[in-house]
Image 1 (cartoon, rainbow, N blue to C red):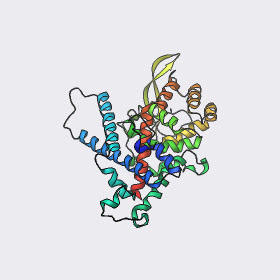
Image 2 (cartoon, rainbow, N blue to C red):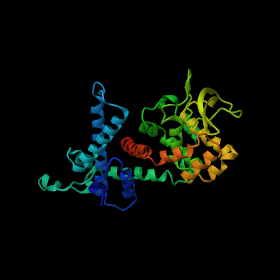
Image 3 (cartoon, helix red, strand yellow):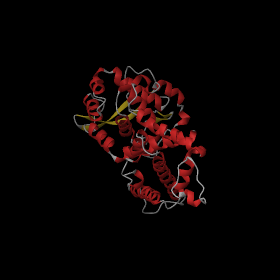
Image 4 (cartoon, one colour):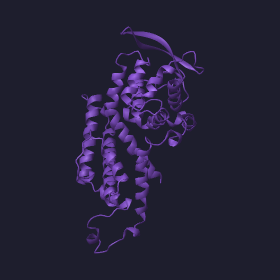
Length: 335
């Protein structure tokens, strides 16, 4: 059963995976293009509905963060259902732009027929499928040639290119996922594990440590111990001593940008012998976070369990898939 004929829900995150599979297999080109067109139509309808919601003058008296979340999910489901039914007609227009052939075109054009070679936009398909395949390659490339070093990436991401505060988990993941992938590649870990840790430490980017100078860009709440030669910021934080929560004043490292934070996180684990066991199990996300906890990364007795819930939860999975899809979209737009 193809993606075009399968009814998906907003909690089903396999759409992009199926598109990846179609790119890796010898599926018919027009069938794959129609699947792509359906995803684009769903995305456009979702943007339209989101803009409509944002155009209202104010929230209702019964609106809350929870009701907004469920309403957003309902809008996403509506966008998917509209795309599946083809009610707006965008899918066929997108299909023509991508160079696909439509059933019945010949009769609609008075018996005229067109060969695939006569359609100039046909060249979009190889580039599109190449971009989709790149998403699979990120996690499988050897470390030596998978990514640039995070220090080089830091120089390419000055402070004005990324927000210092994130309002939603999706925004948090969309901006930081590429950096998480690079950090994960350097230590052989799953990017989901690193992203989950950053999400837990900062509340999905809403509570990044800051002071009068601005954001500390410290995504992993690494403390400024005697080995740290850079700037720091002080903060009262909750620590668990003998299983009891206690407020303690601590100094935390400051960075110039988020790429520096990821780079120092990798260095922090690699330079501390106590985390060697975690690095030895980096290829297993659950064991990785358990070993980090056992090594004393955090004092919260539920630290590893919380990380696992984030890794297994819908919020991270949906945000990652949305990030991947937007990267495919941006790659096509740039070319």
